[in-house]
Amino acid sequence: VLGLSRKSFIAKIIGSIKQTGIQLLAAERDTASHVLHGMLAGSCALLRVHDVPGAVAAVRLHHALQGGAHEL
Image 1 (cartoon, rainbow, N blue to C red):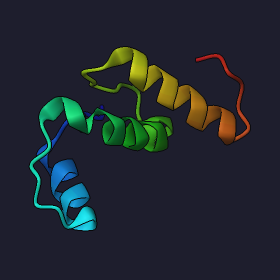
Image 2 (image 1 turned 60 degrees about the vertical axis):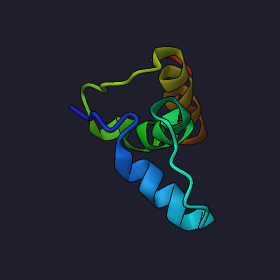
Image 3 (image 1 turned 30 degrees about the vertical axis):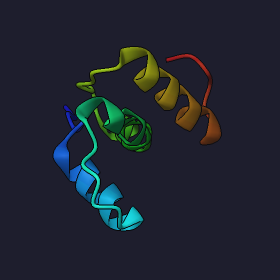
Image 4 (image 1 turned 30 degrees about the horizontal axis):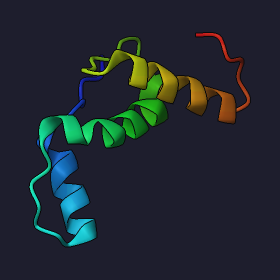
């Protein structure tokens, strides 16, 4: 089970990269959460997410880019 959707460490990493010091709201972390879910979904049986359609799209895209079928 993987549940890293909207976690605060995502905002800390993004903030340090951008060096903005701006606090990202939880929903503003969805894009980064989707990237991480797409990358790690193959290693998990379950994903705990807040934005289901976005997470499904990210996992499908990552899977397709890895040469897999488009079906989940």
